[in-house]
Image (cartoon, rainbow, N blue to C red; front, side):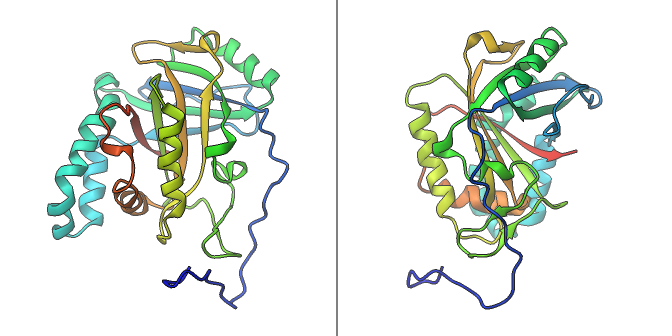
Length: 262
């Protein structure tokens, strides 16, 4: 979109990213947070199964320093490190020494996901849960995590999974006005026109206590699963969105992980 508000349409040929109007919102999502030495691949999972590895805070700080000028670091560094401590530090403190954190993901029919949940209960996950997709705050959910997502600011263009792609998984315990606050943040992210930014997401909410098992971590009743173009794209988008959202609201509790798909 141009500065005067007109949508920018180029005459250059582009490959079209198809919209999937048949996405089934009755599907369920399985999430499993795993603290382990090495990743374990789960057997008997649907074709949608994917595995992600959490980036440690030292890795995130190093990436931030490498992708921003000294001036930006001086201006944004203190706020950035506060976010690391208050929101990303939760996972840093809960991952046992000499362990890494992995997140297992799958989406499928209720029967398939319920069977996987029942099979995996008692197998040592920090958290194992069944969730459903919230349509109102999920952008191109059919393309998460690995598919092409349309770019609504540059019609005909699309985002694809690349080696630079990163994922932001944001975990929320029960709290007042949780969906409303998350929706407001999500809406701001959708307005960003940065070259590197959030490409797609699935906001998922729990299916109740009988389908959530936690060991040593909070019961996370909502998780926002996002794909970003790159680490620098994530930093820039989070900085811009943070100017207008509930990021500094002390009553809005969230604990995020930056992830790489493996």
